[in-house]
Each structure stands twice: as C-alpha cells, then as structure tokens.
Amino acid sequence: MKSLNDTVKLNNGIAMPGFGLGVWKVKDGEEVIHSVLSALRAGYKMIDTAAIYRNEGGVGEALRRSGVHRDDVFITTKVWNADQGYESTLAAFETSTKKLGIETVDLYLIHWPKAGKYKETWKAMEKLYKDGRVRAIGVCNFHKHHLEDLLQDAEIKPAVDQIELHPLLTQVPLRNYCYKQAIAIEAYSPLGSGGLINHPTLNEIGKKYGKTSAQVMLRWDVENEIITIPRSTQEAHIISNADIFDFALSPEDIDKIDALNADQRFGADPDHFDF
Ligand SMILES: NC(=O)c1ccc[n+]([C@@H]2O[C@H](COP(=O)([O-])OP(=O)(O)OC[C@H]3O[C@@H](n4cnc5c(N)ncnc54)[C@H](OP(=O)(O)O)[C@@H]3O)[C@@H](O)[C@H]2O)c1
Image 1: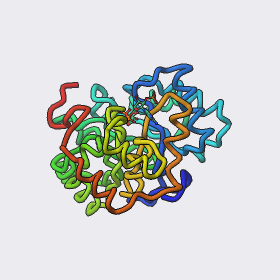
Image 2: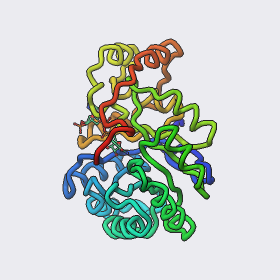
Image 3: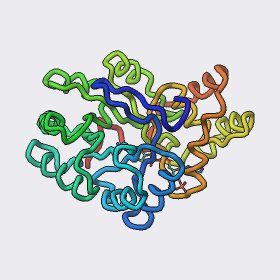
C-alpha cells in the first residue's frame, strides 16, 4: 500500500481498501456522522461498522451527506450473534442495508464464531453472495480451528478474517495459516483500543521518524500487508492516523515491534465469549 487509494485483492478478485475507519462505540447520530464525514474528507475509502454498534443509520446518513459516490467507498457490516442462523441472518442483512440505505454491502462478516450456529449462518452468507447482495463474505474472531471446521462444509471460502491484532497480539500463527488459505487478515483494535498509544517502545520508535505511536502501529500493519481499521471520533486523529505513507519502518524497528508480542488481548478470546 502506497496510499489510501490502494487496495488488497481478496480471494474472489474484489479490491478491498487496505485502510479504513472503525466505528465501534461511536454514537449513532452526529458523532458517527462527524467521524465518517471526517474520514471521507481525509480520503478514507472504507468504513467498518456492525449491526451491534447500532450506528448503521448514522453511517448511511454520512454517506449520503458526503456526496461521495457509492462505488468509491467500501462498506463492511456484520451479523450479530443473536441473529445467527439461516433465516435470521437473511433478515438481519435486510435490516442492516435498510439502516445503511444501500442495496449492496461490500463485505459482510460473521461477528463471532457462535458455537452450533456459524455454519448455518455461513449458508445464508453464501446465499447473499450468490444473489449479488454482498461483494465478499467473511468472518471475525475465527481461530484456526474455527476456520478449519467452517471450511469442511463451506462452498465459498471466507475472503477475510477480521481479528484482534496489534503489537501485543501479533497473531503470527493465524496470519500464516490464513496466508496459505488466501484469507485476508484484517486487524481490529489496531491501537489496542487506545491502550497502546502511550507504549514507551512505540513512542520511542515514533520519535525517530517524527511520527506518533498510532502512526507507527498503523504503518506496521501496512508493511505487513494487514488491512487495518483504526477508530477515532477526533478529526485531527483521523487525519494523522492516515498520514503514514511518507515513511518506512526500518527492519530493526519492525523486529522491535514484533518482539512486543505477549499474546495479550484487550477484547474477548473467541474461545471464551458469552455474548
Ligand atoms: N470484529 C470485531 O469483533 C471487532 C472488535 C473490536 C473492534 N472492531 C473494529 O475495529 C475498529 C478499531 O478497533 P477499536 O475501536 O477497538 O480501537 P482502536 O482503533 O485500536 O483504538 C481506538 C482508540 O484509540 C484512540 N485513538 C485513535 N487514534 C488516536 C491517535 N492518533 N492518538 C491518540 N488516540 C487515538 C481513540 O480515541 P479518539 O476517538 O479520542 O481518537 C480510541 O479511544 C473498531 O472501531 C471496529 O470497527 C471489530
């Protein structure tokens, strides 16, 4: 990736922007509208929302207000756990598209690997894909064993696995597995949900390049060919987070960041979640 306009080719040939805005915890209405409009003005080409974020309405409103052509922005949303199952996923998809005010979703994801349900959900995702309602389908929070299980019955391979990934959770084994399977990795909580902004090593590396710790983390994603979706509600942060295409981390600094891995999560472990 050399700029915000660059894309990653998914396993079905669809071009997905490698960098986007996440909107978890961003309030529906003016707050999310402001975040999305700021991102689109700054040149972002992708927005990551979910039914459970309860802000798809505001995301859709911002898309309309922005005047950006629908084809120039990539929209991801997700089916929530309570809606998993065949018919309920199809219904949840209709609700999401109505709220977003769009006909077609660029990427539709299963939010969590709900035991006993995700295979049925996947069948509905495959139908939406075959019907042309979604341009790509994928999963979130799937460990290798969840993917292996899904792939036993899947007709269509997931295009993306969106997982928690940042310098304290580098996910190397899962990245290697997905690389072999041609499943693109997308990093969520790329800034550790904000918890890594004051990390001393990342700040120290940033100083060398005149960059912030956030820019170092996001540049590290880009250099590792990991799709990334930092969240912010502040226009200044939204702009600066994307200002990462004018420097390159040295191999030594990449090694230093890789070495921070502690398999530490800020969110739930997909093997132990109860929602
Ligand atoms: N699939 C899943 O299960 C899942 C789970 C979690 C997240 N996600 C997705 O991934 C996205 C990103 O993850 P995340 O929301 O957990 O958090 P994140 O992007 O890792 O971090 C966001 C936090 O960092 C702060 N921040 C951002 N840029 C900053 C900067 N330049 N300087 C200082 N602080 C900065 C933000 O505060 P300010 O607003 O003040 O800038 C916010 O508190 C989510 O929004 C969502 O779309 C998906």
